[in-house]
Image (tube, rainbow, N blue to C red; front, side, top):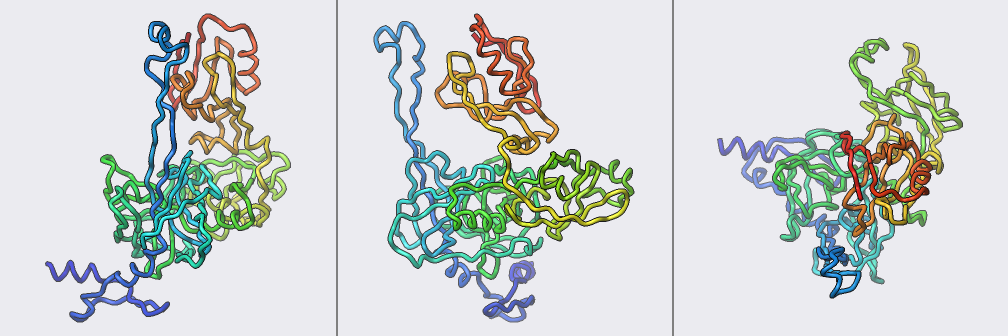
Amino acid sequence: MKQLCTALAFCTLLFTGNAYAQAVPGSAAQMQLSFAPLVKKTVPAVVNVYAARQVQVRSPFAGDPFFEQFFGRRAPDRARIQQSLGSGVIIDAGGLVITNYHVIREADEIRVALSDGREFESKVILKDEATDIAVLKLETGETGFPVLELADSDRVEVGDLVLAIGNPFGVGQTVTSGIVSAQARTRAGGSDYDFFIQTDAAINPGNSGGALIDTHGHLIGVNTAIYSRSGGSIGIGFAIPANLVRVVMESVKRGEDHFEQPYLGAGFQSVTADVAESLGMKRPYGALVTEVMAKSPAAQAGLRVGDVVLTAQGERIGNPDVLGYRLLTTGIGEELPLEILRDGRQVKARVILQAVPAEAAGVAERIGGNSPFAGVEVMNLTAQNTRRFRLPQSTRGVVVNAVAEGENAAMVFAKGDILRVINGAPVNSVADVKNVLSGSAPRFWQLEYERGGVLICRIVR
């Protein structure tokens, strides 16, 4: 049994240079094969990321009349340092590091530690919450840093051997091995564009931003999330594909400080078994067009409501999330070839993607004053931004985009809440919210809003 397990463990890809061959160990020497040379080659390009920020902790006595007699109208706040630990990957010899946005979110100070013991301050070059990707630049005059080359993550297959490298739980640089368990996993992590590589290589807190590499030593993904009830690895980890990292890095090289998503201008829904049967499809897959915006790239390419997008970039579209990923990795100004099912026959279309117009993305507005909404940032829901809040594309209304920390509104609202009614007045747009708030302040506020699909009715004084 022991020999069988050992043999299975080393039924791995043997390689010399760039030539690979699959083989079963046939001798004692082959049974001693190791990932050590690959690890030595790649670990120097994986770094530890330490992020810190100072936050003000509001006194629990704030607002207490007795306490304020002695300390004035404002109770003393306390400063506290919040720290987060993650990993990163050097992908440019000049010192550019890719990591997760959630690792460095709102950080005041970011330090990067290399495997050889060197530490550098770093600054944020680009950060994008939607993709959960951030790019850092080491603040040093040095160059020639070790790097990992980006693989074509579309060529990764289920069953491929992989290594995960990072700093789990802050114990230090760690390497784990496994295989690619699944491709194109969706709705699994903190990215708005959920299209992950799933692996059973152990990924734990602190691995976020670290490397998932293939047996060539190329970066196929950035470790970003795990599925776990305990907080530790149970063999279900997710990585952002390298092809998405590549388009973000192209934005950096163009000197941009943000990643701008492409705009198609159409709404989609999944093709269910019933829909597939009604359309004469043998299998339910693809993205069903439910809406086409006027003068959008989709409209210019001739897409129609009722079309089913079957392939994009020559790749099969399983559902609208997969199509969203294909849009993202195509890039603004690029041509996206589509194969469409229309009236029982397959046709081809070519879409030239554009930047998202302001009216499609929605503009966030911050509310001030003394109402329960003070410190809340709201925006109109559009077909283009509903996915960001994990909502059906048909959802419309006003969504809470952000809530300022320390404000009373944080006790009432959370990001993603959908406002429905304020003091009996229906809310369908930001203009409706501003109109209600422009009147005289009532003795109490009657609020109705959705959170996670649940309607909440609340009275706030």
